[in-house]
Image 1 (cartoon, one colour):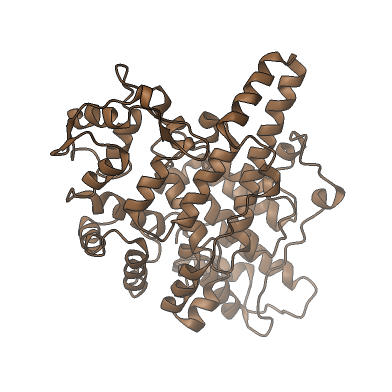
Image 2 (cartoon, one colour):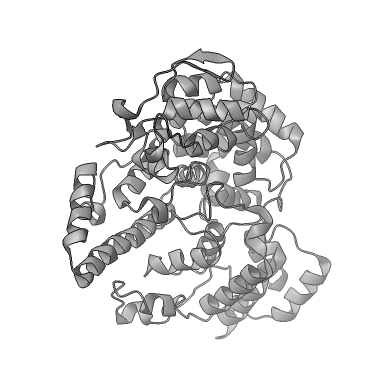
Length: 464
């Protein structure tokens, strides 16, 4: 695979940034990515969903007094808003000239998990997502403080039930185990005491806030520090721990480059992360520029988003109904805003079970044959409002150079799709596009499309 295509896929969701990386260099591409501005406006589709705790209480009161049909309509409206939120985010991933911020937002989304299925308030999920986006390249400690104090997080991890005399340890545990330190770097007493510091932190109007009636004001010991600590002070104490840089560094390496990063790499980049005081931008710059210089193609299985958006871009298929993409990645185990548990998606080999591989091959056939995918799911979705154009054939069209011979065409397509080509694969490719291939014939596009179909079903296409 061409190196620039490879890194376009790693730093985005398709190969279309490869040309920019090649022409301007990886450093310029990163600078432009970091400079992308965040749109802080709330999307129109979510503006009528409850935003504040008061509005949520009003909805709950209305539900209690509603008949079953009215209640069903209210629930259905919020469910449709949730589906619109998925489509809104996927569109941002696809449309962005420099999609690294969205890819990093998705990384944080899978690190600080908070699901719609548990929280059930679209605006809180949106606010959580926006904080991740705005701080995607900022400071890890600052982001941790902000995200823990969102209504979505305190709701998802049951801190609304955490109060003096009746402690709930869920948020306290995940703050140490999954968000910062990792197992083995704290004690159970730290978790219990941390729950005291978090007691009373619950739902607020614009974000989580302490309610004095439920706070625990007693002094306690936390990772070697003592006092009546609250969330910001607790995070400050955590980030004094020498192990903080390594959990997140391993996860970043795994998200972008290596399904199984070496301990040496984790230690090397983690130590640098501490040197720059947990600033994310310089860490990403160092990782991407240094790993870009290495020959490391094929070290990571594409996640479902990388897979489907790569296919759609290569086949120049317009996104007539992005909701179909959302359904596909859900079937592949990557449901946005709804990870299976607080640990998030496992990634790695979990993205390529036999069932997922079969689903991927099926979608390749559908797209190459111009068939709209996810039709049954969309037809069952009452609010998708499919029109004839959404049900029509997709007209896939590959870009390829008609002035090349068969081997050159194979090499060009292979550079865009496969991290390596074996001798046996090459022989198979030359059976599809033979030595006497004539690009001027009427069926030449179909022949190259068959070659694409064959390549996209290989295990090598699943890797970047």
